Image (cartoon, rainbow, N blue to C red; front, side):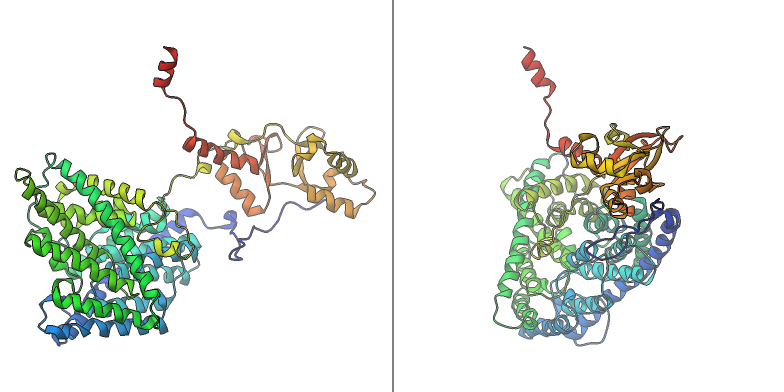
Length: 615
């Protein structure tokens, strides 16, 4: 009795019950990339329009609540003439957002980026349609009623939701949906701040964790088109227009080193303070619907005392970068904005972290430069330059997206002289943050508290670098085709090392050519079908087995195993597919992983040690 050729169904993913598609039946990768690029272009245009509408919606609510007029001009709430009546305005917004979160979707709470990360890593890049509608509206209400937030987090989540919905509308894989979600997020970021490069890098660092052509090309297309929409509707200039700055390189480098340490400590302190505040709200003996209103009440009091904390505060950030504020005002803004932000965001309302953290950290950088100039008059540091550098370093280290915010801080001012100090201060701050918060960032702490681990580092897959010939077993577990199944079963029972150490055996014909593959399961079934044991192993084996080649990558070989639900592959010569040259099992796959572990952790003696030993 001969078994049919190996036609087993693809392996299934236990967690989802979905089948792994057979690559042999899939469309060419080049066609899929073209399709993804066209979809990304459409997502970029839509995200650009959404960012513009959100910008106008924030202006509309700001005008309605603080100036009592129907207009969509983007104004600062700090110029209002409401007096102490300004205190209940944020409370109104908090109540509305609380109702939307309770009866709409809780996904609108927070600053948006962790929710997008969760969708990518744990929900196969699926986001509900209601998130795309309620998130920007709730953020516009929260910011328009004085919330000290930025628009970037909500638009990143909203753009990501648009990308996810497009991926769900079409016949796509989970990986393709991830790319489209990231395209929407990058486009939203780019359209909000006119920063196309930073938008792409941010999506790679926080959402994709990969750098491949299949994702990079659509990302760039989406980000470019979204930025073009921004330029058409809001102008082509940088986000903040600043006067020429003296970054003082190289004479100011020692002070930048110290600033890096301070920025790292500030990032960690802010992260811990934010989540400590969330914990305190969770202890309140009231329904969570009222939490945003309670946080907004605290914001209203702070906003009455320090009006600059109300709203996004782009104008205040511009004043800080242009060194228009005295040190006392900088100190007040630094502290008041940070407190207002953690109270508001910790209460579970909707809004972005980026702009408020920019304001607070920029004020910190300006105060630092002024303090150094007071102590060392010859230092002659520029408060605006140190404000800009601190602005990128604090958020970059807090979010573990350091590279993105080095580029971001450069793009929003377009002063190339800022790059060197930005790089230095940002990486020092990132190092400090990693030392003090090694397991989570301000983006991933919320997910970590739910038991969701986020690995934010990415590296090349070792299976993409090692060939089958490097780890295959050259001692081939082979048996002749004429052997009886009963004889083989007896040798397995006696634990004959030649046949018992492998779960699968290669069946060779009289010429030593590959005829089939026999597994322990095949032996058991053959004995059930033929108790006398007269059946040969060739009759019981799988004919026309799946094979691999010595020059094939382990990644491709392991993919064959997964798609065909098998645990071993004969290694054959490409010029003669029946000539067996090796055997690849699971230990061969794991050997490549072991090699990577050894490269990471095994220390080799250096030449200095050899020199010391020889002398």
